[in-house]
Image 1 (cartoon, rainbow, N blue to C red):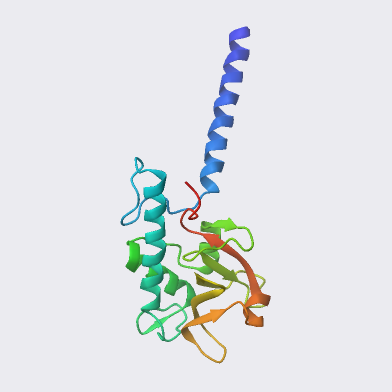
Image 2 (cartoon, one colour; image 1 turned 90 degrees about the vertical axis):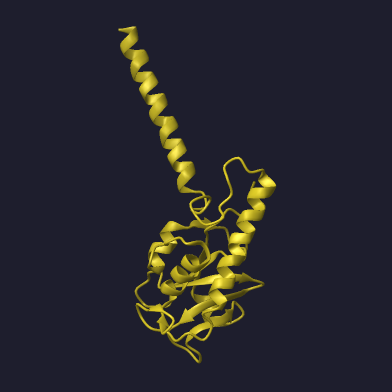
Length: 185
C-alpha cells in the first residue's frame, strides 16, 4: 500500500516539474536559439547578450530596406507588403527564420512585455479595426519610433511612425519580445 502512495506521489511530483518547465518555456522570448548566428548554449552571458543585440539590429537593418514599399493586403514581396508580411520578411531576410504570418499569430507567439520596457527589435501590437482583435504589428526602433506597413492614413506602405501620434498611442495594445532582453543573461 505504501509503494502505491509513493508511486502516485512521485508521478505527481514529476508532472508538476514538467508543467513548471513548460510554463517557463512559454513565457520566455521565442528566439533564444534556432536562427542564424544564434548564441551557442555554452556561450557566456556577455556573448549571448551580444548575439541577441546583433540579431535585433540585423532585423532592423533588414526592415529599413523595405521603406516606401507599397501596402498590399496579404503582400509578401517588394511590390507590396501588409504589416505582418513586412515583419515576416524582415526576420526571414535577417535571420533566416519563419515567424507566424498574421498580427494575431505574432501577438500570441511573442513574450508579453510590460509597458515601457520595449527595446529595439521588439514588436508592437495595435487594434486598428472595430473587430476588437489585434490587427496591426510594427517593429520598434527605440525612442518611441517604429517602422511598419500602414494600410491607411496620410502615408501608406512601409513608413516610420511615432507614439506621439495620437492615433497610434490610442490604438496601442502592447509589445512583444522576440529575443531575450538586452539586460537578461
